[in-house]
Length: 398
Image 1: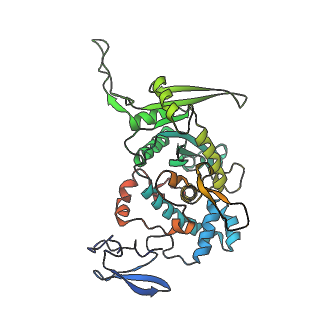
Image 2: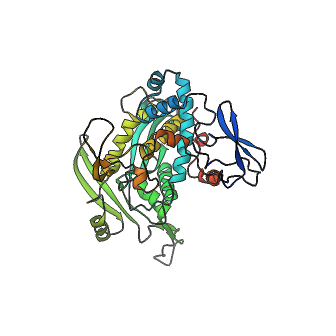
Image 3: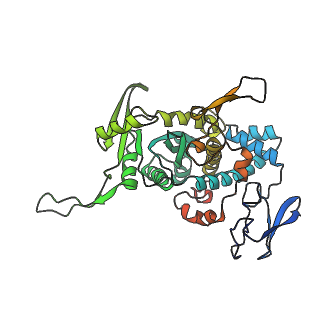
C-alpha cells in the first residue's frame, strides 16, 4: 500500500479526493498497529489501508492473500478453509471483501478499449439445483436452476470484456452488449457468435439505429419504426450442425455487413483467419478450470447467485491482472537466469491486461487487493451501476 494514492475520505472537506502530496494529509502515527494519516483541513483520520481490501481486515495479510489465490485458482470454499486453517465462514467473508475490491479495480481499468474483434458465447452452470429439479414456484425459477454466464471476449488480448450471469433469455443478451458498449470506445468491433438468435436482436438494440419503413401501398396503417444495423456494423455466426450430439458440419453466415467486407477484415486480423468462436470457447475451459463453481461435476456449485458473481469477479480479475497468458508472452532479447537451477528464461510474461495496455507489468495478488482507485471514480460508481449493478442489486436469492 502506498501513501501517494491515499486521500481524505470526507466528502465535505475541500481536499476530498486529493492525493497525499497535494492534499493536506500528514502521517499521524498508527491506530491498532495500522499506519494512519491526519487531514489538517478537516481533522479526519484515515488509515493507510483505506479504499483497499485490507481496510478493517482482522487477519494476517499473507493468509488473506493465500486464500484469495486459492479461490482464484479453482479451489472450493471448504478446501480453501482447510488450506489456510480457518473456518468456511471466514473464507466467505474474505471472498466478499476481495470481490468488492476486484469489481472496483476492473470497472476502473476497463474503459475506452479499442476492440477490433469480439466473440460472444455462454457457459452453462446452475445455482442451488438443476432446472429439472426445481419446484413449481415461479420465484424459484427466477433465482435458482440454470445460470448461464454470458461472455464477450476480445481474442487479440485474450480479454473478457464483459459478462452477465442469468437465464438464457433476451434480457441478459441485451445486458451483455450494453456492458460491451460501456467499456469500449466508439469503434464497433467485428462480432461473431453461435446461432443463438438473441445475439442478433441484442446487437440491433445496442448498436443499431431507428428508421421509418416506407408504406408500400396507399391503404393501411403507417408501419412502425424498426431497428437496423449501422453501415459499419459487421456480425457473423458460426452454425454447428449436430447429429446424435456430435458436430458433423460447421457453416458460417454473415448476418450484418457483406461477405467481401468481412473477408477483407479477416485478412488483416491478427488472430482470426476465418469466422470462428474458437477463442471464446477455449476461454470457457479456462474459466471452468479457474472457478470451482463452473466445474461440471462437482459439489462446489453455487447455492446463491450473488456468491456466484462474487467468485467470478475474483477469478476474472486474477486471470486478467495476475496470471500471465502463455499465448501472449514475448521473446526476450537475451535469455535471463531464473531463481532456481533450471534453463534460462527466454520469454517475458504478459497478462491480458498488459496486452490491452491497461497495465505495464504482471501484478501480484497483493497489488490487486491493495490497489486504490481514485475518489473521482468512486463518485461515478452509482452511474455505472445502472449497467454493472452492485451485488446487493442482483436477483435476491439469499
